[in-house]
Image 1 (cartoon, rainbow, N blue to C red):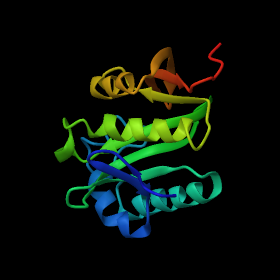
Image 2: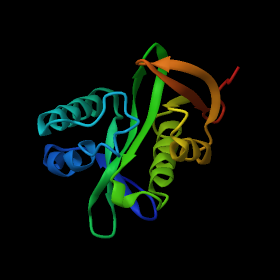
Image 3: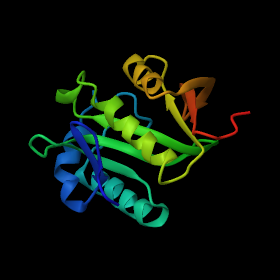
Length: 173
């Protein structure tokens, strides 16, 4: 896969060399506050996450990708697509950024790139996302990316708001 590029970011498949940089944000309790799994307690967990996404990319043609800041080449987060699970069928849009990059619009920029790729080359017809009600910044990102609220749901023992987005020409009924 060629990297997906935006004005400021590039999204590309993770590689094992990303473990150290990714562990920096996956281990941060504030970054992972709204994650069902919480912060990664070890580099091994981050390595396993990256390996799973390398495998997913090879198997399905999409995954959670590394988000790289074009100015400087820093790994600043992750965004992309994954099978959702949790009893809700579909492909999920996911994103997470280093804390020092919050508030710059990067999550929306990366999310929009992933959505464009999902409905363009991947020819998906629907994406979903789930967010805890207290995570208002993430709710705003989803809304800016065009997602609409569909239901309240309990996921992994936590209350969640489920959103969805239908691609062009998809039957949303």
